[in-house]
Image (cartoon, rainbow, N blue to C red; front, side, top):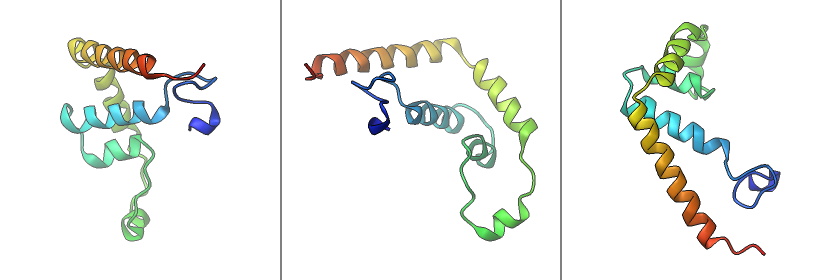
Length: 100
């Protein structure tokens, strides 16, 4: 990702998609009660088992949509806490940035 201009010092911004995906997966696993299959499909993860993949024909779209609505309506305090943590990390990165 950094080679594509993403991340600290990149010309496309300091954020990388993996951070958002990771935060979503943490929320899905720790806060929500959605099944693991729905969470993994929302992240477009491939089913490794060829047998399971052969029998899984649906896209779980309605369940993934419900999960996205739940995420958008999740506890505002939790979201504010995440934002504050990201801001603290950004400040630390700015302090340690050695680019001229």
